[in-house]
Image (tube, rainbow, N blue to C red; front, side, top):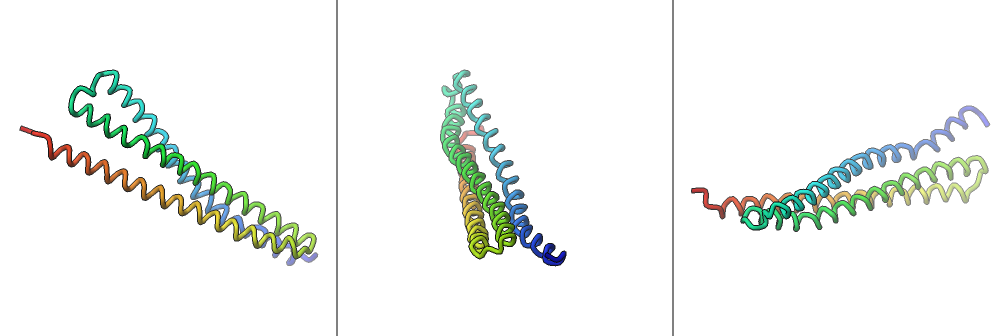
Length: 165
């Protein structure tokens, strides 16, 4: 095998690494969001317990805050699970792209049409799984947008209903 052929084979094998790198960048953002939501869940649970211990549910603002927390917790829990699923999907995509690299290497080494076809199928499967991960990210962003809008509307309505005199 010539040096030129070897270089071409290595380039072909390395091509999926671009998508692996893209997946890693996406995954980094997902994990950051996952950690942020996990911290927010913990702080809301802690705040709720403090409000209950202080009997803050007896005054108007305390009851309002407890209601808001009770509405936010399930939504945040849903987003947390969605991000977990999304991270697993992106990890799966990375694994498929790694298997694609192996299939390419084997197809070239053995001059096997079957492994070449498998490599193409794996590559397209990896792309489909990556697209699924991106769809899940879009869904999470939409849920996040709705949560922020709800919070703003609720606080605005609360401020409008209070007597500031």
